Image 1: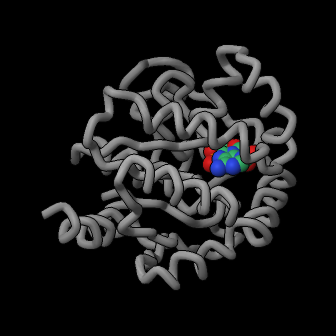
Image 2: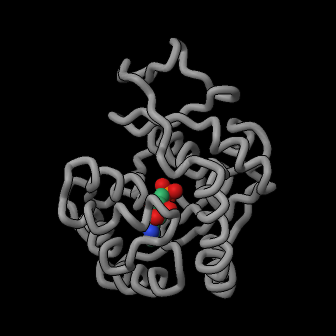
Length: 218
Ligand code: AMP
């Protein structure tokens, strides 16, 4: 069984996915993380994706799908459960994901839609910092690192994502409403869509998510 985390930027999908991975035999597939990694290592794909990401636009489907396919086919993941964070981002990607899943004789069993007010999301994203090494996220008000600006685990300086400024955040939200939001209906029809009120505490949201996935893990 596999899970998709849906929702606009800043609702905490990545944080919740990281918590799931730490507690359960689940693998996170975040296309945003994979793309940022490609840029960091200077790959051809990363160079092609960079301009789109800096503007808050979607990276072309074929680039993203290639990354996802590579990750899913990796033998190290064997029969683990995947949680997709930030993928699919449009109907075409969802259709392609269904095809990939059918090929590996698997399927998506649960899609969680994270909901939160826009101004609250912007506040959260503007204070967000990330560890460039392990990708853990922090918030300078709500989830501070233990020491100064350092990752609790890697002890390296936290950075702010270049697309976490207000103008680009608003553009990412617009892209979400236009391209990603229609996925709610796509998965609602399949009767695998659930919703989580992401404005509550990280722990409360996590507990909701655990309650949604536990019955599927039996
Ligand atoms: P995220 O880390 O999920 O907020 O993604 C950051 C940026 O990466 C997005 O604004 C897009 O430019 C790009 N991106 C991430 N996932 C996808 C995807 N599934 N399809 C297209 N672009 C993506």
